[in-house]
Image 1 (cartoon, rainbow, N blue to C red):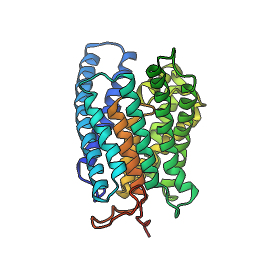
Image 2 (image 1 turned 135 degrees about the horizontal axis):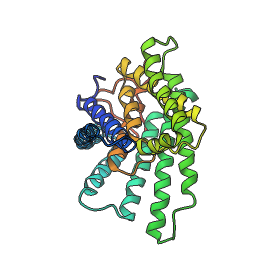
Image 3 (image 1 turned 90 degrees about the horizontal axis):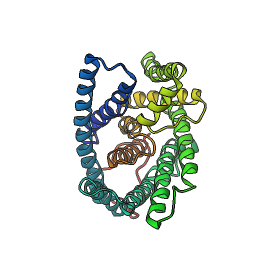
Length: 317
């Protein structure tokens, strides 16, 4: 657990991963299983647990975004703080009012504005181009997913027929970035001296997906889009390598106690191109943690910033 962050960030990761694995993966895979009494009892238990995890994750995600916004306000970084606070407010409003085309479009635009603000935090002149890509590829995938939904929402707002023709282009581009990000993150964040624990953690999800895909490719495709939103239009070995890279990077950063160790599991749990405000919140928090993890410890409260969109923290070492 990074000492610079409140303890509830760790509970958020646990709740988000539980909601993802139980609610969007394991419970939905039950559709392919025989409906014996034991399976039905297990399915009900998993469903109830995942609903509790989803509720806890939603509350903790709102608290985390407000904590980040408060941190930004104390450092005179008001534009990004206002965007995050507005996103939380609209997310809470969506609990009472169904998201119309206009509200959905505003949500997606707020996410894009938050990404722009975080880009100023993450991208620094001292970094190499590979370091920039370790944040840029995941952020680009999130941006592409939001452009996909925003294009369709704009069609609805303008009263134009059918989905946007640009939507599939954004969606496929984002999925390519997700695959590339997993491979790069695994290569960049994992130490060159691979321990057997990291190798095991990296191998298990990749081998499990490969076995499922080879045994039942249709089932693997359905579960992939239900679980993380990917369509598997790329060659399946790329997904195996990328999944192993994501797992290895997350395990390595968690072991180091870096904020990135909390951010990477949240990126996975958030999925690709989500529409629910909870998953969007997870992605925003994850990208902030990933950016902050590359900047070293959080600055002391007394530090001020002349430009609220520019981060001046020096790299570690």
